Image (cartoon, rainbow, N blue to C red):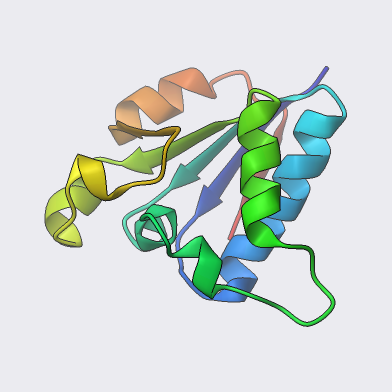
Length: 117
């Protein structure tokens, strides 16, 4: 089993589709997955935001998110996004955890596969 860490630092489809597709593949293969949304990517985890993202020929991103959560993948949002993006904890989708960067780094210290988008 691999430990996979993916960071997201944007809200455009090229920033969010790869983490969701690769993350879904990782947890589907039994890997331990953590996706960390930096402040730039945090708005994608606000309730209703994923529903507005689509890509021609790409899977349903909400289904990917739900599958990741159901299979035990962790979706983290950087706490700096709260003030930086004027967001509140209750704005985020169910299953999203708000953590500091230090906590994220500690949780992935032994990750053997990493991606950043």
